[in-house]
Image (tube, rainbow, N blue to C red; front, side, top):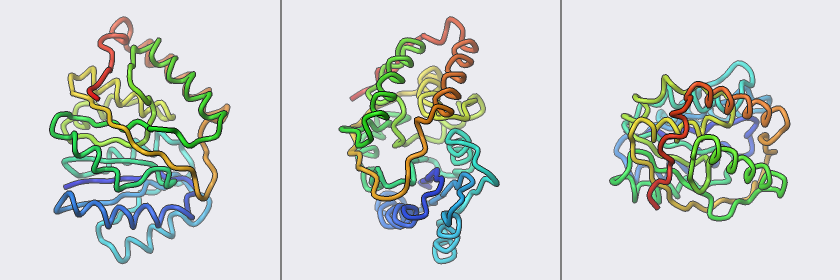
Amino acid sequence: MLSCFFPAFNEEPNISHVVQEALEVLPRYADRIEVIVVDDGSEDGTADVVRALAADHPEVRLEQHPRNLGYGHALQTGLRTAKGDAVFFTDGDRQFSVADIGRLLDRFDEADLVAGYRIERSDPWHRLVVARVYHVVLRLVFGLRVHDVDCAFKLLRRRVLDAVLDDLVSRSAFISPELLIRAKQAGFEVTEVPIPHHPRVAGTPGGATPKVIARTLVEIVRMRRRLGASGRGRSIAGRR
């Protein structure tokens, strides 16, 4: 089974499009699929849209947080509830095309985790500045050498989840690079592939706020302390 999940917060204008695209695209690659939306306490009609889709499509499932817990919580919920032998995730904001999963699958035979990186990031300038600083910090602290430390477009095998899931501690945006760090430390092969990134067509981005940045920095420090001297072990160069 191929599992696909979308973390979403206030994505009512976008979520129907990404779920319907997944229902159209994923059967090309797997006989059995599931499409999960993790609604992180949305204050709009995101959950209602997903319920309506699930009523017509048994492959669709809603996982809902009672309140907004943050991106890391949403990703953890998706990873823990996905049942497939292969698990794919991307955000529910339509900045990635589900059809580009084919780019990941083309490299899946040679890797345990295939991570996308944005060819050209379509975000406001201040988010690009924050992302650049974030990239440098993670490279210095953990030796994380990848093109795009927090690209939300990844495909991984069940054995990777089984090995690292219980060790994941992040509840912030740091969970995406933490997943790479844990997988590499566990000895899994990580490969990167370029993925197009598109401007938002609806909704408002919720990342890169001072609160999110502060929480992420706290988690980076905590993980560095936990890992101790081993935290900078092998760098994650990946195959390209």
